Length: 87
Ligand SMILES: [Zn+2]
View 1 (spheres, rainbow, N blue to C red):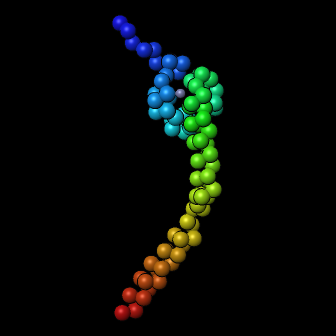
View 2 (spheres, helix red, strand yellow):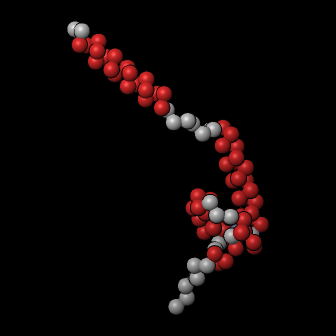
View 3 (cartoon, protein in one colour):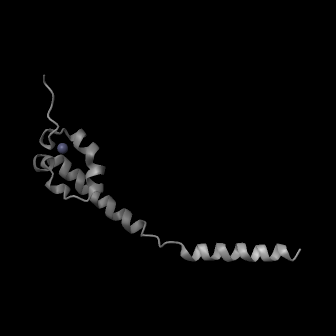
């Protein structure tokens, strides 16, 4: 019965990279991941990803909730109701 242990230590680069989005999403300190201790390639990849993520944050700053938009839509609907009533 030979089966690769599902250890972080035994991950291939492809397996590690497949988990990257989850790892990043989990908010954990990825740089402490065992695979990165041994793998310079994936450390470089992660550094690239962080650069891209940082650039993306600057390109798409957080959009504020459109409260004003809803107010405008609501008042527009009310005005329209009032207008058709006049008919
Ligand atoms: Zn790797």
